[in-house]
Length: 177
Ligand code: 5GP
Ligand code: MG
Ligand code: MG
Image 1: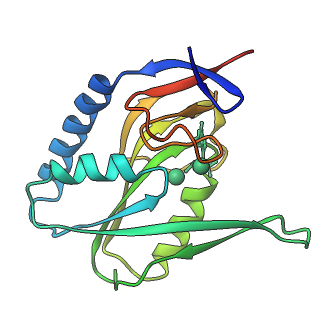
Image 2 (image 1 turned 60 degrees about the vertical axis):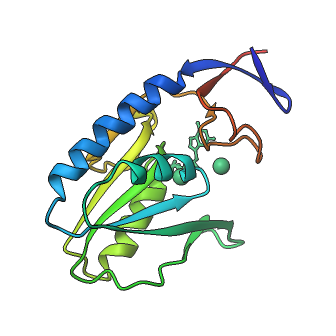
């Protein structure tokens, strides 16, 4: 059992299992984008270790850039508004690969893809370390998925609980009391 702030977690995916999937996904990316000079867009903060581990395994000509999605509560009935921070590089005509930590409802990714499509990239692909299929509300094609997990809160390998827990090398899942 591992405590992060007031919550208890247990190991779900070991560091070795993560690295094996990272290797596998990198192999596929190397093959698929060999002659495409892709640009990898890492979505901060949660993906920073996934981005770094994937990027080290890429042997093709490619670039990396980092985006942050700022969500805030609107006082209007429109609910949660989102804003993209950091797209300071032209992506028109480029093959874009989004690197995400986790796809939960799919809303973040849906917003991201719609925003990126406005800039006319040649293609948009998605690689996510984790996916919670049961939580998905907006159907989005995920090209590369590290692990499908149950609909329960996880931390570790970059993912946080109120800022903490990112420095676990394995993925930890919340346990009751
Ligand atoms: P979505 O928009 O797909 O519902 O949520 C995506 C974002 O919510 C992720 O990028 C991540 O920041 C956060 N998130 C969703 N599920 C989890 C989880 O189990 N643990 C952590 N730490 N963050 C999560
Ligand atoms: Mg994320
Ligand atoms: Mg977070």
